[in-house]
Image (cartoon, rainbow, N blue to C red; front, side, top):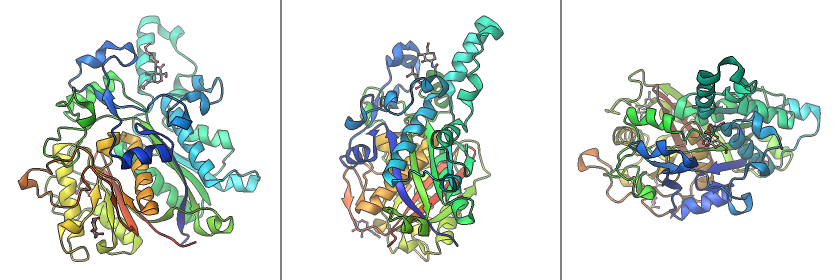
Length: 433
Ligand SMILES: *[C@@H]1O[C@H](CO)[C@@H](O)[C@H](O)[C@H]1NC(C)=O
Ligand SMILES: *[C@@H]1O[C@H](CO)[C@@H](O)[C@H](O)[C@H]1NC(C)=O
Ligand SMILES: *[C@@H]1O[C@H](CO)[C@@H](O)[C@H](O)[C@H]1NC(C)=O
Ligand SMILES: *[C@@H]1O[C@H](CO)[C@@H](O)[C@H](O)[C@H]1NC(C)=O
């Protein structure tokens, strides 16, 4: 089997643009969640039950901010919706980081892209609908369809660099980023490509999208006056997720290919597991008693026992049901017959306290944080965690509360679960090149 390693990372997140900026703030326990009241001068944010969001900061890249003109060619912003622009920014960083700038046709033909989004160009659709209702056909833009297609982030990345390998986009709600990375790794393992740019992107902090999530009772509503405390995975007072935006992209590469060109290797993608709940549109099964299939399958793929996992980067979005179900599932896996002896030995944290829930980008951004934990030997904290769960919830693992912990890490697992009951887990490990 061809092996797959990670050689490049790129981030556009509410904690900043650029892996170094975002990682430093994550380890420092900072929050990227802000009040949305007054955003874009739009009064409709104020009437929502949840008025907080994790927003990518504006500014120049050298200070960790987002400024589209640093990433997008002049005029291309008209052709690219926001989610595509963020993806271009993350992909460019990852390719620079990997120092992969192929010039030969055969190299470009062996390089592919797998970048998806959960929701895509939400405000384009809303604006086009409003214009159409008012002005009819003559108000329809020729750029409407090219801006809103979910696969257009991947498409634009291929066009920018001339990559002619697989050009693919998953859209599986909040599991999108993890599926994109896992599927891309399979393309390399199977021989369809030697290098893949893979990740997820999202930009839908719009009052109507938030209205939908609020009606589904998914959003945090109790901390509108204290935005930085609103996202609190595993904490007793958690009350829903905080919507976020951004993108994450990795460069995945076949092991021998990376070795031959002397690339810096962050780690190896050891396992990828996928599963379905077949249960409910938005809620997970609460028992968690059954085998947690996606994690178990990632371990099976890696051919490793649960005891080998040093750190789990949880999906935990700060919802009452979701965090409890994942906690049960993690404990069932990690304290099973091939796992650890006690819950306090299980190291698990959720970065969503700091960056909120980036929906289709979450799996990719969190895979990058997991790879950084592996690479640097530091576990990122779960911020706002002051009282783990209710006693009845059995929250007795080490959730890395509020402060990063230094720790030699050889293997990490990261989870992503999406509406529709779609689960995926990725496992990364150290590799010597
Ligand atoms: C949609 O319309 C709003 C209000 O005019 C505007 O602020 C926003 O930039 C538009 N979004 C897009 C993607 O065109
Ligand atoms: C998309 O970008 C435009 C222009 O920067 C901005 O006005 C709009 O609010 C953004 N849309 C979302 C959903 O963030
Ligand atoms: C999917 O994830 C949820 C949330 O942790 C978990 O309760 C459920 O058991 C998982 N299902 C499968 C099939 O892995
Ligand atoms: C979890 O982290 C703690 C504190 O850093 C450490 O002492 C322990 O060994 C870790 N557990 C495992 C199983 O790696």
